[in-house]
Amino acid sequence: MRHFLVFLIALSSSLSVFSQAETIKRVEFETENRIRGYIPMGTNGILQDVVDEAKNKADKKNRIITCTLYSTNLVKLGDVDVITPNGYRTEFTASTYRTYYNMGVSGNTQFMLHCVDIPSLKVTTLQGKMPRGTFIRSMSALDDYVIVKGDVRGNHLFFFKNVKTGEESISNLKIVSSRDFKILGYQADTVSNEFYVLYRDKVNNEIITVFQVYAKGSKTQEVIIKNDEGNYMQLASVSKTKDGSYIICGTVGNFIVKTFTTGIFICKIQQQKKVFIKYINYLDITNFTSYLSENKQERIEKKKDRYEQKGKELEINYLMAPHRIIESNNQYVLVGEAYYPTYRQVCHPVPNAFGGATIQCENVFDGYQYTHYFLCNFDQQGNLLWSNSKEMHIDYKPHDVRIFLDVKFTNGTLSTLHGSGFDFHYTVFDSKGNVTKTATNNMIETQNEADNITRSSMNTNYWYNNYFIAFGIQKIKNTDEKDKRKVNYLNKIQVVQ
Image (tube, rainbow, N blue to C red):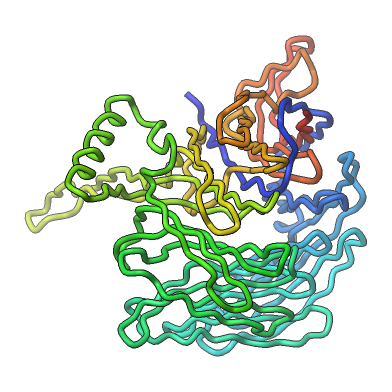
């Protein structure tokens, strides 16, 4: 039985058609220090985030994080310590290809922000305060700005700080109906250097979606989108197109307060006006239920036919993680990953009034199980040209919603890639959405034929061009030297045509 969880990180860049994955460089590290992760810096290299146990044991007053920069050939270029007093207990991180940000928070409002320049590894430290009563939720990075999402007594704010000039600004979201309010999404777009916020509210007894655009810490646009009854937006992401328009895509549901969704939407905003909004039922997406057994698929199809005979539309509930829109050849591709929450039963004794104990059991959240993904190809008017779905091979259940799939759309051909266990899985779709190729490659070999990997954990992440990284912990037995070793490994993976 495997005793190591397999972790996967979102693959988030463009690749050409995939056909083979190969390890071209490998580095091994001792396991006495805790490697917290790797931050891809594009062609500037890759940054290793490490907790040096010896340094932290010797210094009782500070938390020390060692940042080590490696070249694209996995050669060490240098390292630097990021030192934060222990009073700053909560930690947030973010990065661009030029800077790694590490922020410690004390008492929810005071912060210490370390800015590590890449590739010089020079550290600039800034200190400041958030508004009183702020509870910090997350941090993003965009160019020379860090953007902090916070809550203040039931209200929501975004705090913008320019790390070069020190300039600060705050945007408070105006909530009309706390019962109906929901943040649908917020994201930093490194291509347009804009920050997007989407939230839903109820104004004058009407459900609306507010779309905001920020640039250099200031709000530049705000668009009100009216929700059609029965199609309430639940999650959304934004992409800016080549003509300066915005494409918003995501999931919709029948009810305001429920999180399960019944379909997807695509909306175009141009010159601060809605051009179109289109909705698609999940069951209208080709092969959407193909990951299920044949019996379950047949039951759904029969139920769908009965509804159609009555002039109704069958709807099924899913949770879906939407990708940003892909724009290519005057068309849009929407990608979504389906998942559902899982629970495990935990039982424990509870003392009773008679000196004994009774057993009480409760269901505890056990992570999200990802099942499959879908692809929808639209024209510039939002009309669906084709769609398809395919099973995902994800054997790790994250406790937060994330993106596992990487997608590339080139000359009418669409390619998908995701990692799972020891393998890369990739699929190629033609201009009509038909699968033309599917394959799997093993990718965490040690480059030593005498090595036998007995146990392994794996993370994957996109790096630059056609290169990925795979990293984790392995137990290895070498048959030539008759020895065993436990190592932290880092593999550079090339995906070639």
